[in-house]
Length: 339
Picture: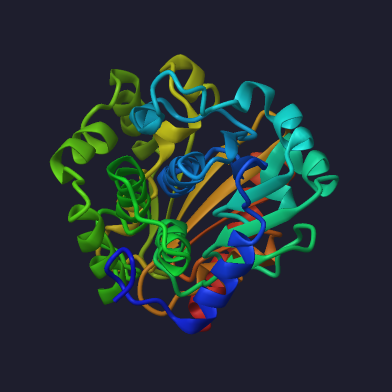
């Protein structure tokens, strides 16, 4: 066993020690994650903020897009931890930047240029990716259930005890990235890590209420409208939904309110591949891929410049919605028919 109750693979210990060597007391550290941050990215950076602040580092969260409201309960009250409103300045003035839950510059939005000029960049991530960040220490393990699992490993490898607030944030990361412990990445180790976090004082019911049972009315109305676009092709095992134009604005919703909607078409009997299409303001089309069985959506998403995991991936594609749908659906049918 280790400091926080779960043994760590040797390669993760070595990577954790390399990252920790950058994190000396007194240094200024910027923590960031991908655009449209999810529970894993936010939970990981909030937990690391607590760990670093307790050790005399000047840490701040500097994200390319705002933290969704349903995760605000994780932010330390009155501590000024979230500095995303001045993210580029935070990153440019930092001694070290730690990028969490992503290793691709393209997913860091307007912060990409600032990060390429940073003095030192470390990365903690669990996605399948070649990575395009500047050189630096890496704790990357695609077999991990969530980046939060790797932050637990970092803390444990260097003897940092997890305070309750950090444990709560990391539990959110694992909970959300495993779909409430329903997905294939809910491994025995992920459950052991979650159990260790519960022993640090995490209240699972209050977290469930904050993350999954506090939806604004607009999120539910958005869900109804998106599901009304459902198309199912049973002969291929394919289903998809499309976010109608201006639906987010009309329901006063955000991109975070779309989280989980693609799971509905995936839940249909016989469907092996589910897709969600959304036209972005920059003229690109965001595609979310989800699968069951042996369908590798990371491979499909990679064909369109995206990536992710075997059963959950995404891509951002140039062109109109109709063009993007035509290309992705054709590739999806061909892929499914070949299996």
